[in-house]
Image (cartoon, rainbow, N blue to C red; front, side, top):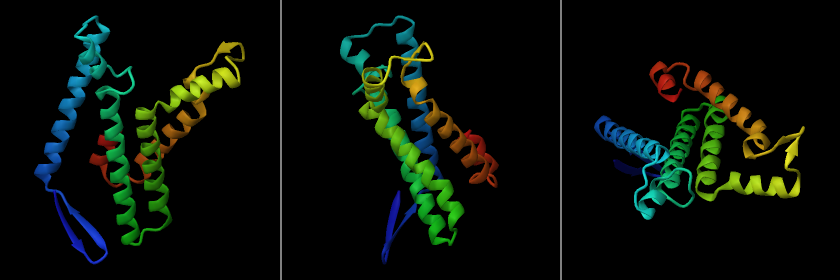
Length: 173
């Protein structure tokens, strides 16, 4: 990746080869991590340190760190797009597209490494209630409004911000 400083701005130049290389590394790692977790679910029991690092169910492991870094990378890319839109003179629509995506990616990245939803689940069960309408409550039920709003935001983003880029829209979906 080449970087050039011009006055007060920083420009990034990423070649198509570098971008493809990054995507290959990301997808190979994704595939290996998913395969390892499927093997763990099927009963594979490697030595404890390896199990702990590969398991996506455990905190403070590669299985939690890696998705967090991908989400943080998404946050940075959305932030760069926001700055590019502002520089190009795109006002409100650019802000309403990229800023929520960057914020959502940053929040999900932090949640992945900090276990925010687990802490919320513990707080909700001990401070509010263990049941809602007679059903046991866990973090997915308690955070359902946020989850629905995040899905709506992502669908809106894919249709609005990526509407003129069919390849990018398909990749995002």
